[in-house]
Image (cartoon, rainbow, N blue to C red; front, side):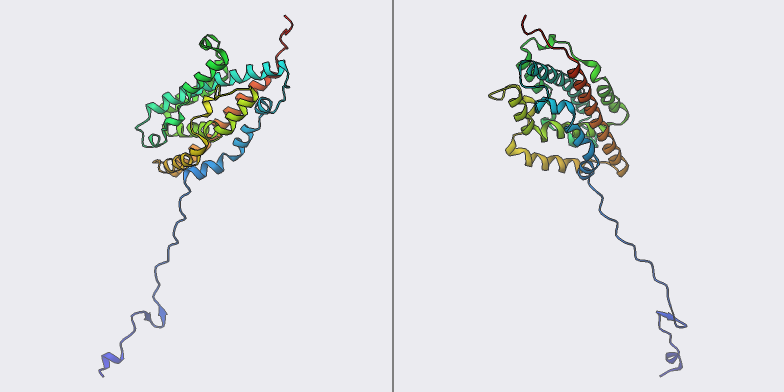
Length: 259
């Protein structure tokens, strides 16, 4: 054996000290999908929107079951439908204008278009001349203006408003439709077209489709946080509308039923 071989030093050591190795990088946690962020981030305002005084009065008899109670209930449900029509017309126009937008187009579902259904319901309650009934535009000005602003300033936030309507009117549609039908003694599906976008048997499939498309939208983490915040705002607008309607209901005077 040569002297050179005897003096060979192992490559992993130098003077008994280990050669420093590169630090092991921990794998980044998977990115939370938008559908989950919205579900968790809007839980509180969503519950509040479902439990407003107006909704309780509409479906749980707070205005009584007599003639006057039904009068109040019907009058304010009609006003609610008129307000929803304003919001849906603005939202549908906005979504249609952004159909090819990378962060919006995947969430444009025909099932979300409910303005024509609301018109059917107004026809049921008011007759063919329902358009002659004054609309309470002052109750929806803020909401409609916000939607119109987003078209120019931040189209990706339109997803938040579409999500709120999906939660309020489609996901809860079969249940709400039954409650409205019982409240006003409606039969054969009349007056509840708004809530018949997706039938009970197809709701779970549609829900998976919505979540899949939502999670595939081309949004950064910052943009997803903005969508969640905007959805909270949209729920708050819904709550404000219900509060305004309940204040109006409590302030109404009894009609002269004996005339």
